[in-house]
Image (cartoon, rainbow, N blue to C red; front, side):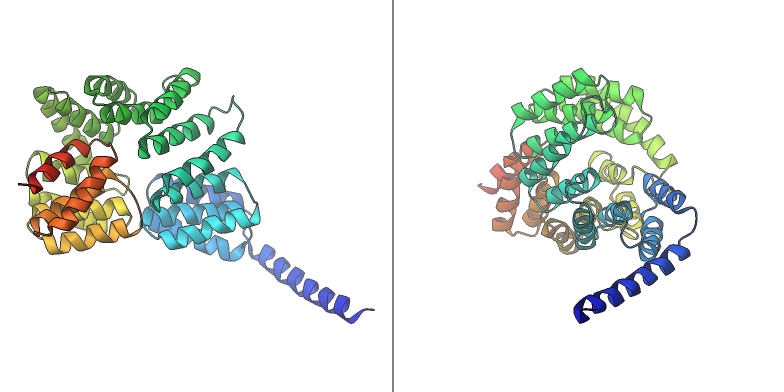
Length: 356
C-alpha cells in the first residue's frame, strides 16, 4: 500500500475516533440545548448564553448554528473580535448560508461598513422565498436600515413601503420607517407610526421613542405624559437583563435631568456588557455628571470598533467640546450631521456654536 495513502488512513482513523468520542459525549438533547441557549439570548442573558455556547462548541466543533449562538452572544457583550471569528467559521463550514450572512451583515455595520452590510443582506434576501413571513420582512427592513445609514433615504423608503405592503403591520418595519420619517423631518408621520407600534407592543422602548418623536413634533405635553408612562414601565423591568435601561439612562440624563440616577443605571449595565451602545450610554451618563475625561475614554472605545452612528458621534462631539478639544468636537459633530439621523439637527446646532 502507498505509504502516503496509509498515513492518510491513519490520520482519518484518528480523526474518526476523536469524532466518535466527541459524539458519544454529546448529550442526547443537543438540539434542546441549542434551543435553551437561544432562549437565554432572547431573555438577554448574554453571559450565560455565551458560556453555554462555548461548552456546546467544544463538544460539537463543526455545528454552524452553535457558531451562530456564539456570534450573537459575543456581539451583545461587545466581544466583536470573537464574534467576527465565529461568523467566519459559519461561512467556512457552509459558504453562503443564510444565518451566517445575517450575522456577517450586522458585524459589517458595527465595523463601519453599511454598504458591505447591505450587499450581504441583499444576498440573504435572494435566498429567501417571497412568501417567507419570518425572514424576508426582517431582511428587507435591515436593507432599508443600511440604506438610511448611507443617506439614501429614498431607497430606504421604497424598501420599507414594499415590506409593509407585503407584510402589513410588521413591527420592525414600522419602527424603521418611523426613524426614516424623523430623518426626513416628517415628525408627525413618525408619531403616527410609533403610536401604532406602541399599541401593538408593551415594550417600554417603544414608548420612549414615541415620546421623543412627540417632542420633535412640538407636542411637549403629550410627550411628557408618555415619558412618565415609559419611566414607570422601564423601572418595573430595570433589574432584569431584558430591560430598557439604555433608554432610561438617556431619559434621566436628557429629559428629567437626574444625572445621578442615570449614572447608577449605567454602572449596572456596563458591569456585564460592553457593546458600543452600552458604552455610549455609560459615556453620556459620565458626561452629565461632569466626568468628561472618563466619558471621552468610553465613547472613544465604542467608536474605535468602527461604528458610524449619529448619536454616538453627537455625544463624542459634545464631550470633546466640554473638554475644549475643538478639532475633535468639530470632527465628530460633522460626522453626526452628515449621517442624517434624529440627532443630526442637534449636531448641526452644536457645530455652528463652535464657530463663534
